[in-house]
Length: 344
Image (tube, rainbow, N blue to C red; front, side, top):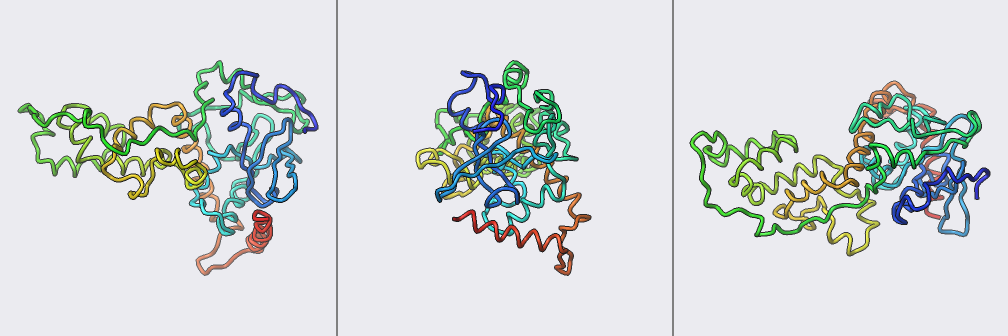
């Protein structure tokens, strides 16, 4: 289903599980070049993406054309980007904001820069990974002939990237009593923390980053006891503040009932404050999939930083008086019209 299908466009057979293949072969297209403004698409090969609407119609997207690349991200990447921009709810206003990303920052690159937004320091955030070396081109200058070297990635130190970032650790709804130390603590005379009233500890921990907090509460049995009991609400606050450990609205909605039952949620009616958030905080820092997710989130934050820096001098900024430029009004009108196609 492509104008130039090549074996190199896909991961080597047997390299990925079916679930991994389905994930990496699916993306979310965003922008006014995508029917409905936002649409889940499947990679057909070469320079083509496509999908189906609810009506009997096949959608076809040319990925690289006229020196630019359509903004298409893996589904979890798109969901996290929408969260970074506070655009998880599907409405015209949020879609206008998402369309403005490439208008304000610039269009995605081609070739070795495939899918990369200009001015975004992908290599300077998170795990500081440069994926450009894994992009190759059969015919430089010929649109859509670039391909990603999955085999080289799998043999590199970044092989952990070949994990799905939408598979979450099980959220422990209750603290296992066998993990909680007994309360017969022996506190040393020189223990500057545990010799203080516990109110001091509760006042201190909100100022500690996740890593420092985890190191502190692992230093003795008393602190571990409190980490598993009285300090669980603080572990919850850390998880929420990190953002990436929690499913996005779309991920939670898309999950089956059984999967949702073991997912963490910011809603305390679903995941109470006295659940084992400390264990969950540990788990999300140990799985490869969550490591990928943390890396993606750092890139999303960097994109948002660049966008916020460039928006005030762009034609798409709304003035303090509510004034809008001609370009902004035209974009809003176009998105509103195209959004109707989304629900067809």
